[in-house]
Image (cartoon, rainbow, N blue to C red; front, side, top):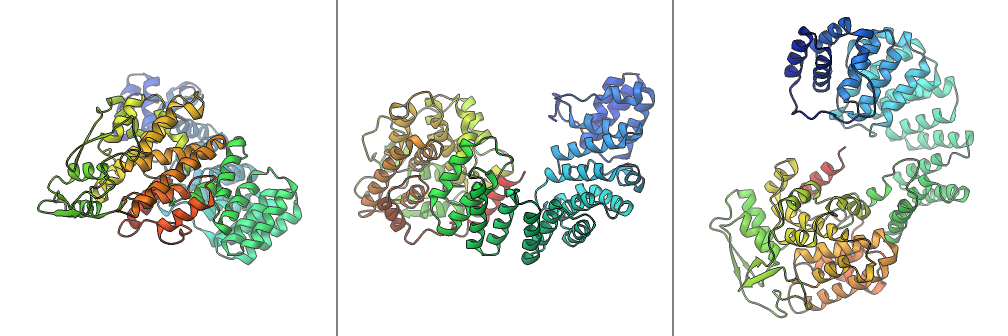
Length: 613
């Protein structure tokens, strides 16, 4: 249900006023359009429903003809039709449309109207129909629904209560109601309804609903017992095997969990739920990246899975380069963050560096905190201002220790495009690759220009958060996505001699900079999405990391730790390079690497915002 409106958004009051004016003039179609707009913005406002009733009274067919359903119907028109259907004595159809609107925007109180929560509705409708509507609503909701979003869904829970009062022993209704109650945090009620459901009408789904309710309550033993009974009722439903495995894993019984996934895979090696769960649990057991890469390969080769899975994203979440970029470190960035926190543009502050900092770091610091004085103690060898290998694309010019971009600024179209996709977190590397397809139309000059002329952060919640906490994160994010855009350049060219590979490899051997990390991440991402390039990328990663390690023996390499994390995120990495990466990190990589304080809380906010639907 796309918005389907080209005019600027009006408030509900404005839409209602225009609807009444059009209605007084007999212009029913314009009145209907404005009423749909008012309903979309204030679906429970009594005055809107009063005006809708006036429109129905004068419109043909009770006003239904004014709100037809097609493939591009505005959600407000869908809701208007739902209310008119209920008024015309067809509440079952109207309830289905409200559930569809809830699926489109679960945070809006579409069903918070008298006719939905009235006990009479439950008496009029068939119990199975109500159950199907509740299941339709549940399918659009996370489990559990965040507390802030539960109020909008409360009318459906009232409907469930009313229906169960009328038909207290209907197994399907009790199970569907339990699923809704569980999602809305009413776990005790969910257990009670599901228990009554399986007692009244024993069924596989009833036991599954009961198992989920117990699991939400933290009652693992009862949950496993219920799910076990579901398997006994239908041994061929392999999704339950995966549910049991997930429940066992959550309680720390990983070996038993893996046994259940193996049982499912023995029956069907390609069953998606079991494959996803098995790879996630194997990775949880031994930390081997190969399990996640194999899962990504399975997802790519099976695009028509029965439903969306979050196992790969769950394993990559919060991990350097698998689910987010790494925060930049060093005294210059510490001083920049302090200047931002003090809101003083660095006035009167100075930071003394043992060597030249990455040019992107210097440019970010001087643009955000122009009062910050940067003093460089010397220029150790090898000179960090020089590329690590001969480069055909020089991104920076230096005047002593001060870098300036060597490339022209990107076009306005490129700036707009990057602002639409750049973000410091992503579900997993293949998802980042897919999200960057919107940059495919930009030419190489624009993408390179974005690397050294990153636009300002957007004027939205993300931009404000970054500006208040760490402006460098936005710059690094722009560079990451620009390099992912390069990965989409001329994809018809064979990889070995392609422009995209040549440019990215050139960038990783340039001046030690954040760009190095961004370009290497793009190559690592290429290896995730294309098995044919893995050996080549692994070789490039190994060479670049070996060079960083060699330089680090004579002087600091600010990007060395990030390069180590990148190496450990690369498919098909050889054991020697993995060991070198671990050595550069200083200790074994943690199971869920997290940024160091004080940025840990900041990154949790960023990744949570990314996950929010």
